[in-house]
Length: 416
Image (tube, rainbow, N blue to C red; front, side, top):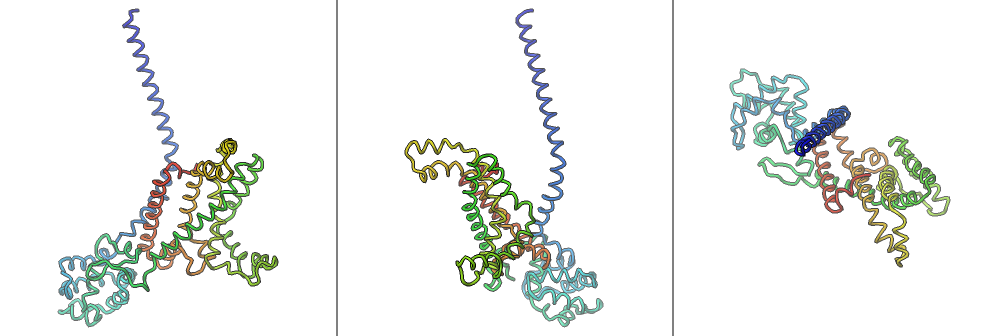
């Protein structure tokens, strides 16, 4: 066979083999995607989509346009000076008459009451005393039924809140509000709540993370240096809290930490205290219970990193004359930095969303943002504000994670 024919044959074989390899890789990729598809669809439908819809409630403002379509249209050209023209009064009366006695009137009043206290009572009183459609002076009749309609403020609030999207809830979550003139300003001190609440949430979360690090680091180090059998038993002890319900563990601390509980009784029996310590319904109880719940989340990432550190590093440092403290500070601690970063991130992110534990063992001044999100969702039924609080909390966590990632490197924040 001529040399050029052999080269062509070899080239054809190589090209065919390359095509077969690519085809096999595609089949493997499609197989992996097919195996992942059920879990991806499940997470998307039951986790990502509901969260996205809930977060959208922080800017959604469809209620007013849905309940008062003619009023919104009639007020579109109003300049905001004095009261709107008579057609706006007629449109409002017509929209309220179309709603009838349904619960929509109450829902509309509650929504407007968020922006202006007393608006719900105004809407309900107006709906109960609607003038006759044949009335020639609908404006005077509505003002006679509810004198507030003779002022510009209720109309200005109604126009301000009539857009499809709104910044109202996000501003409220930052203790801000938009006045009748449209300017944004801080709410009165007696109404300012959420900015301080975010600060408290961060303080408790950072404190919990620091305590977990101080307590978990030596435990993880002992586990990493222990014999395999001993390390297995210690690991089982660390995992035991996961086998018990969070509610049960928190309730147990309520019993243990009360004034006449076992902890105070033991301290008095040992002679360390004379009077029972206040360990429950305060910040101390919150830290104790949260650290108990979250400590394993710090120990496990630290342990996974520490067990991969060879003891020869410390022995080499000692042979070169380094004292134990210096060897720990310059060699061992930097090697454990990925575990510290991953554990601290995990504990902090879980801490900021805590709800049950502070609600049971904390006092009124110890409740975190999760408590108010749950209250606004389930009791006050103010989903817009609850969604805004959740959105800002999520944004805060993402920003802190990004800052920490830039500081120590994102690869060190991955839990291995």
